[in-house]
Length: 376
Image (cartoon, rainbow, N blue to C red; front, top):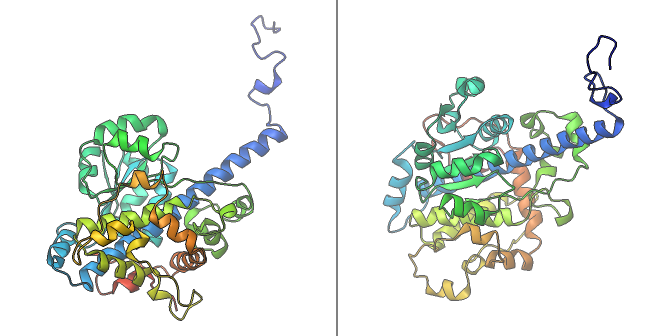
């Protein structure tokens, strides 16, 4: 009992008093949590920007360079809305969303006017709105109108958000889930949608502690080579921050995008080989690399069944994440491709930044120039 006559609930419990300092162990744990969260945000944003840039380059290639029976229809599908730029939707709030938008603009060849955030608190994104980013609170309309939908909501919100957009997501929309605690199959069941890319992150504290102490801003950090190298999805298995399945899902989602546009499978292969191998000629990359062939993505039986003008079949991306694929085998047989793609990733993320044109992402530049701008 305190001298003033009232009960002191904190008597004998100094750690619960307001002025009680953190112990050394608590300080260390708190710092570790902050470092891991920062590293997770850094990797998430970097990989999302790389993905959007690749998808944009593929679409630009279809617009500019490929000729096939339905090329006019493919070009119409790309140009019928938002000119030729990817339409990006983001469901969520908070620090991750802000950083994601800034990195997409800085590194992903995405114009601010083509990004829409669905949020209950648009006032928290005034800085982004000043750049030209749109804010709304119509989850259903957003899901129905974008090419890539980033799920950045809190885990406890996922069931409600999924019920709101289920049945409204365009079949061609790629759902890119940063709610990484939920497996792809569970997401497929919640959303009624299988075109899902879901990175699985493995964040180790070292060497992120050193980098976090030097670069607290995600955008600032991704301008530095040592940070970009740590975010690379193509490092040795023991050093990766994301599981290898992520890149398989990325490539199969590109095949799905080309399937929707009715791009013949041989043209799709040519586009991917040009973007991932052609632009590195004469640079510090593999000489005579092992290019993608049809059997890199589908079984031999399926490849033989494809006619000359047939696109690759539609792929269930949630199945890609859960089982071995022909692409898994291809990467295992050609392990040196990891270092090649690591080089491509590093050069892409460290390129000089140029803001996308407001009237479209492909204007006045070829797809290769948009993809690997200012390498030399």
